[in-house]
Length: 238
Image (cartoon, rainbow, N blue to C red):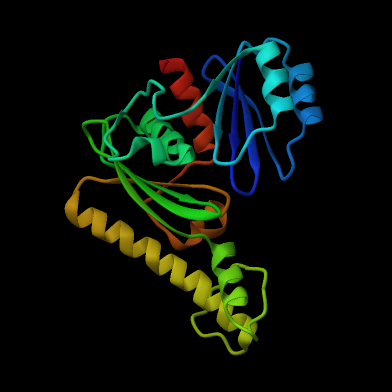
């Protein structure tokens, strides 16, 4: 069995794979040593673990996992199923690399745009030669709301919710309209520009806000747990 862990900016996502199947997945706002021990109690046959982290992993968790399984941290030198053509591979977010490998694992040699809607919205492109070329980074939904509140004196911090209107008729609904419709327009615009350059293009959308945004997009593949799938494909390839 293989344990995959993604330490993201907001949450920690965990998956356990038996052969090619994910048999367990969970997400944690706070991931403690106690939670790690519970997973190993549930799955005593875990032999390998791969971690993607954009935040620090506690020494206690690192030490415990290392005592139970072969532990690998995804980094710029890890052997991958795709070719990393990023100019500065050491600065590339590990989550971006993982979702790209996950999309390649699902779709194979095609032009693929992966849109990961989380704390940030990241756009990552793999061409039909299985080369990762890079992409772009933008603000996620919650971050946009926080920015409006932080950089103004009077705009409130609001909780985002799904809408089907264009025009807000009070401050709260105007912020929601701006954030949601602006984000959707951005994503559609990026997809359109990629399709102009790559006529044959598969678009994969993943991340914590993917389900929230799903109704706004057609002809896209929605892939939950793509980071975990990517980590699994990487450790199988290494």
